Length: 81
Image (cartoon, rainbow, N blue to C red):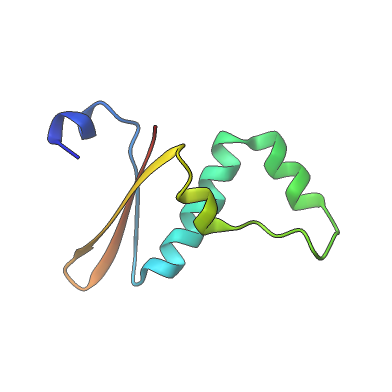
C-alpha cells in the first residue's frame, strides 16, 4: 500500500501485543461500526451454534489488512475497500 493510498483511506489502526488478539478486537469493532444492525442481532442471539468468524470477516474482500511490528508490539492496519 502506497503513502497516497493510506492518506486517502479511512484507516483503522489497532495496537497490541499479539496479532491474534488484535484481529479479534478489530473484527468485533469493525463489525459493530459498519454493520450496527447485524451486530445488535448477533449480540442478542442466544443460539450457541452461531459464531462470528473474525478471520473470515477481516479477510473478506471488504477490507485491506496489514500486520506489522512496531518495536515489541503488534500493529494491525485495516482499511475498508
